[in-house]
Image (cartoon, rainbow, N blue to C red; front, side, top):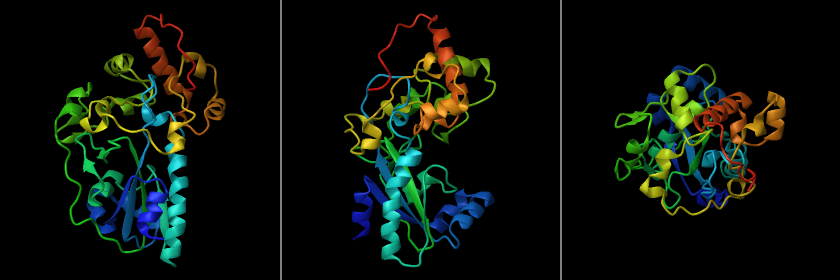
Length: 288
């Protein structure tokens, strides 16, 4: 089986490779030490993009969090690739990673020539747009970066204009201002942050910069059933009320929004309730 057959067979929309040495300028000592601990003598990285667009049913959860947790679904798909790689390259190490990684994933994709680079920092692979999860495989197999790195998107500026918090600028993304990060942030919030959350349409995540992106118009549904089926589009206050952390994780096992516990969702839902005067009408059930 060829490399392309391995990756496309796992559901990847695009894949490529980059040299580990090319990532080092973006990795601090802690990240380098973690990478070496996972894979002694790291030399190369495979990177792949998996489409997740679940459809556009109205709801208060970000599109990426409506299906199965990608931290579980994507590694499961990548493991079959790693098994194939071990057969093709006996004696080599292959370590799959998704999100919780010492590697700068988006930089990996750019160096591998996978898709385009959006101004919002996201990888774009037509026709799937930015609705992608990235996965990497760190290896001691020497690999090279693409002859030409991913080019910038059409640079229309729509994502910068759509960001209400000013997190997106020509210089990059300020994660401290990102509404997606804010919906997941524990602890005390400033009055300005609370106001921003109360006006935000989602209680988990933020899709604003993606929705206006020209590459995200008429995006096809993900072919991966993990993200298309058994969706939860909405959460209501009663869905998370009075739940302990354990009860919450059991009730919503396998969902990407469970990792922070129920507290931040209770806060975000309460802010939404307050902003609407507590007069929200009854919505349809959250399971679609």
